Length: 287
Image 1: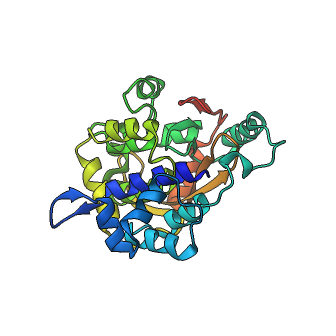
Image 2: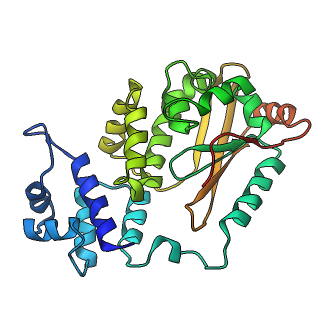
């Protein structure tokens, strides 16, 4: 990633921090004090003028921002001078990548969905739609909301079908998802696209609360796995683990998540839902 872009991300992360003594966002001087750097060095980093970013400097920045393990991995990778598109091979066509992942989504005999790095739901299979009780009308309506067909939007909208279906499992699921979303979007925090999405999500009453709580919790986020045991609004007691596979492309990562049942009752529920074609249903566009 170019130094200038990395600097913008550092500035965006700094502005997310609140100085509780003043109630204001961190200044460059405050970040300097938290990291042991000078204000001049902080300014140079944010402007992309710091030629070398030593490991110790990066560690101090990550510590000051209280990044989780998943976020730290992204943060240290971003400090590399390699451009994002240099990460994948030049002959890796993003269209071919997408076709393979899309085919997998339609072939999986369990509830599954595909999203991009912003959490936009690119598609779901029919088992997922049936499990959460999503009709085609509701799917089409999600596409035209301000936040679009976005997982966070579907979780935090007070009247969403997904929120009702999750029942007493909503709180734990929402907290886990938002922690993982922080890591997924870290390299895009400085972009207008992220700011527009964040603004749209912030209109939901619970989202700002969970966003702040995800920073303040001492529990680390070091995995994309999440296990859920709750009473579903329609199917009763269920337990499953969400396994997420990450596929790389030069247009951003693709996240294919599958619900893997943990108990006999959930196995039977998923088997009933998987009868017939699991054709993938498109939601958000990509790339």
